Length: 294
Image (tube, rainbow, N blue to C red; front, side, top):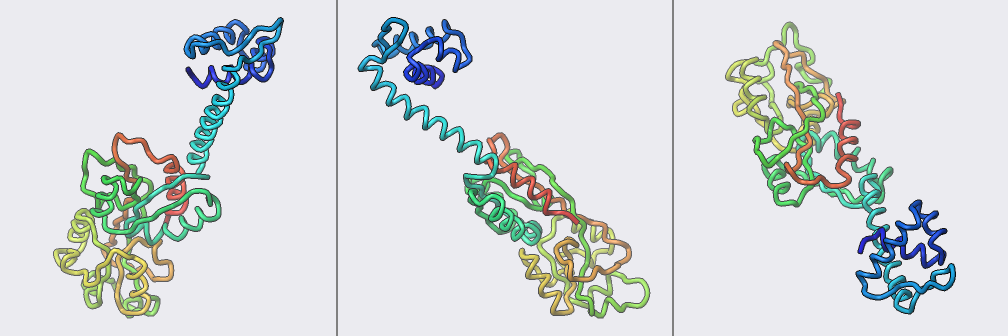
């Protein structure tokens, strides 16, 4: 039996007329008759007695109708639930955020979900890329938003680049380097603590190409953690220089280091390859694209 057959049954039980039910269901009368007869054959008993032009439920038919109403109701509820999840009005979405997205996205994402999509439960996990990727593989997360350059390529992971954001050396407005006379070289930055999140090999190579071996993060970075917000706060209250995406620290001043840094973070949405995404994931994707920009 099918839901279509059960809907035909309920319609006919309500109207008592094949003609009116066929019109209401937008099918032909013979098609409705074949549907009901097929259901009767499957159940092994008649569902209707034909009394003149009217079709009346048999005692067995009345029992079937009661159960059919519940089945159709549950199916409609399930369908409605799916639509609500896609629209971001129900369901659960579990997202892992890397250091950059955590600083730029977490609070706006939480506020947006609370105000515009209160029916959806949002669970956010923080941590380094390796840990978040393992949680994704273990199905403890539905997706990651991370700097794609920090992720080791793997066939079981799908990466969709969403946005690139410019990186910069930043410091507090009254930092000594803001009064530097002449061309500001990287060597001048080495006089002060340099703070950063863990940097990808690609960024490390770029820094060495720009400024020489002294610029390798393993040598020059003296303050490192996964939380950009903490590093920015340190830079606001000390002589530390922080290397991060420019948009993460609007209160800090960008240093005009020469040659120019010219690096960016490539933030991507990571999911398990070949797996159906969480229903609310397109909503998260749209919000990332709206909220993360220079």
